[in-house]
Length: 196
Image 1 (cartoon, rainbow, N blue to C red):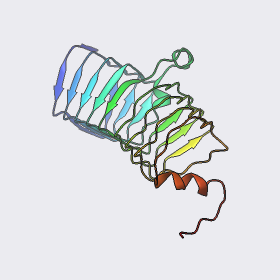
Image 2 (cartoon, one colour; image 1 turned 90 degrees about the horizontal axis):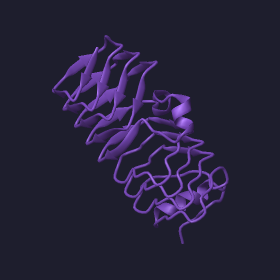
Image 3 (cartoon, helix red, strand yellow; image 1 turned 90 degrees about the vertical axis):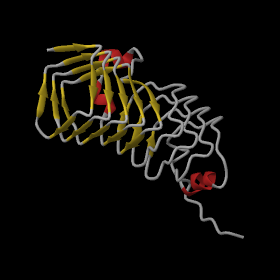
Image 4 (cartoon, one colour; image 1 turned 60 degrees about the vertical axis):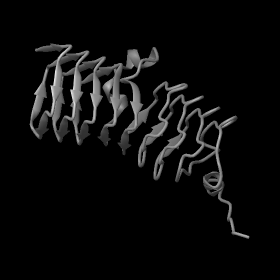
């Protein structure tokens, strides 16, 4: 089944399965998908506005070039939504996030150079082996977010909050930070800091 250029408003799905559907250039507004099993589906060039996506189980799902505005996405492994060959060519399952909450999401070996997460809540999310040089994390709540073996050269963390990650396990040359949050980087070096 295919939906091309369709609009879905107020769609509510809790549990159950969605099988073998292609969504291309569709608009999803105020939709809620909780605990849904997506199997063999494809999302290309779709726009999600004010949607909540949580506890999705994705099996053989492909996503590319989708945009998200004012959405809540919980626990999604974004890297599992992209064919490895397309991932190697620098494609992403998403084009943009604007004012989104992305809690406990996984970004594994994705090329997100100069990508903007500005103003998004990334609490508890996990970035491993990602290319994030020049990426914009300004104003992002990052409580419990993890960065491991990432290229963060020139990334912007100004006005980001509650981050703490290893400067040894990541490349951070030229990255921008603001006080007092930047002190959290010193904890990753095993230093003891006392307030004067």
